Image 1: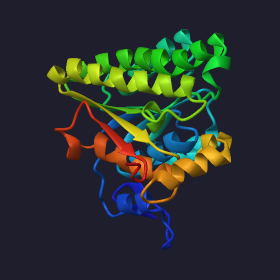
Image 2 (image 1 turned 180 degrees about the vertical axis):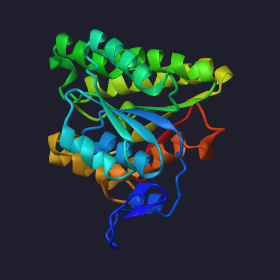
Image 3 (image 1 turned 135 degrees about the vertical axis):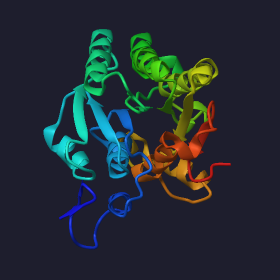
Image 4 (image 1 turned 90 degrees about the vertical axis):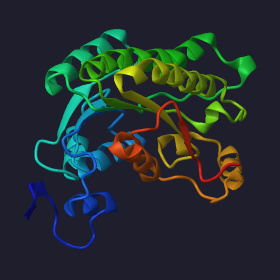
Length: 271
């Protein structure tokens, strides 16, 4: 059935984000959001949550997956999702994506979620420098290049919210995280500079630092290391991607209009 222009399913088994949208709780109504890595994990949850709350989403992924795009769109209204190819390890791909995003949005972007990235485990003394460069190129340089292009569109309209998905690995020196943790720590620091420079144009920049989260990376972690991190958290569980998406929704919305330059840890209470 149709309800206030939103395509919804009948029944009582709607996910909470979709139920909120069907009830009219659309805190992102009339906003356009770019979400990278939208094909799975945290990015997929963020994209679904955003469209469920009224946003139009530009879903960026390395290879466009039509069934995934359809699943995201099913959480919102008609024509609420458009897909763009993006490879953060390829400068030409990033520049082409920015041009395409600008064309699709008529240069008006309200939210950017920098979620896509790559993981790599390995001890410091055995880490190939080529692998370290690859991770930093994707998780830091590529993210900055994309954000430069999108933020220029935001500053034209003197409004915007940039949300960087970093990691508690930026702060917790767990074994084997030299490449991943360093890249995320650098990106979290870069976000603070972005916030300081873009604030005059009313563009906010914040980071979300998830703890252990049930994504593909969860299965790649050594069970002993994963369980140790979970057991150090007050809530004694791993996060679901939706836990991170809920915080992204807050930072994307006007409910957080006076918050910038911050890193919110969503780790279940690792103190």
